[in-house]
Image (cartoon, rainbow, N blue to C red):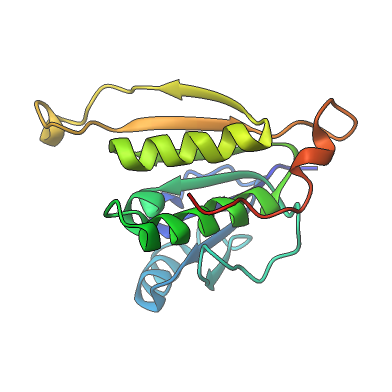
Length: 173
């Protein structure tokens, strides 16, 4: 079966593989409407939905790959306990939605409070984590914060530690 992807609307393009099962969500109805009108003909199999990334309507383990581009940064915009709790809810929801053997990829600016909280939440679950620092886009060259990609891999069914990940929400940090 083709991989099942959950993407923000800005990342759904005409060249997304036609064999891929794509769901695109955003909290903003305008973002969904704009992307739907721009890409519906080229991506008829793509589904679009207004949804909150902290509490989606999808069943557990619905996606093989979840990609967040800046959502975690936006939710955790400051270092307050309230912002941390909302960001933890989003990470918990991503964990719930990620199928065994799946990947949760986050493109972030890597602010210390965001990155440390995110990595701590992933470590609590025993997820495999790798970091990549892509070359900065020209408009960000020399900026204090640079894009960083965090790839979190959930163990497949039957692998050591799977029971630790199943269903339990992440704690707030």
